[in-house]
Structures are given as C-alpha cells and as structure tokens.
Image 1 (spheres, helix red, strand yellow):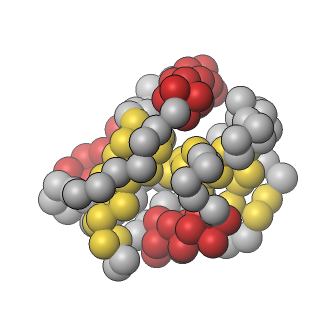
Image 2 (cartoon, helix red, strand yellow; image 1 turned 135 degrees about the vertical axis):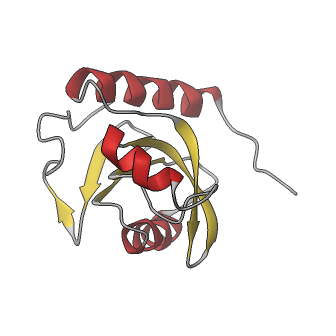
Length: 130
C-alpha cells in the first residue's frame, strides 16, 4: 500500500473541524479517518459527524460500514483535486450521507447535498471557514 505523505496542516484542519462540530452539534460523534465501504471501494472520510442513532445503525452494517454518517468531510490537499472530490462526494451520498463538506486548502468550507449549498442543512450554524 502506498500512501501520499500528509501535511501537518491537514491534521490541524481535521482537529479544527472536530472542535467546530462539537461546538455546533454537541452529542454527536466526530471521529477522523472514518472508513466507509462504498460502491467504489472503501473510502476514508477525513472527519465525519453522526448522531448517536446513526452510530447504532452504522454498527449493524459491518466494519467498514456500508452506511455513511450524516456528514462526511474531506480536507483538500495538494495530492487531490476537484474531480476526486466529486467522485468521493457521489460515493458518500450514495452510501447514505446527507451532506459532504469539502474544506479547501485555504480553509473555506463548501457544502454539498444533491448540489452545492451556501450553508449546511444538517448543521446550519456551521461556519463557512475553518
């Protein structure tokens, strides 16, 4: 297995996202590097958010889960591009995610459901920048 080297900025962005998720949706779970079995193979979302009820259903589908959390977040880096993000968004949504967020290298948060939206429908108070 060959992995692209990660940058510390990527890990710090993940931690910042976790903190903001905890602030805006206390009671939910927001682990990093969460594996999801999709139609395109196992994908690992950088950060996710799921309600406790969703976690119960996810556990029933196996490990890695075939059911995506409500929110899957990807953090862009120099090793991926928007085509890859579109592909992952499609897979996460097909697996049951309600939203997929993409955080750019500049920290802007872009929210996607069926199409791009100005804000999250699941967590409407979540900021547009990390």
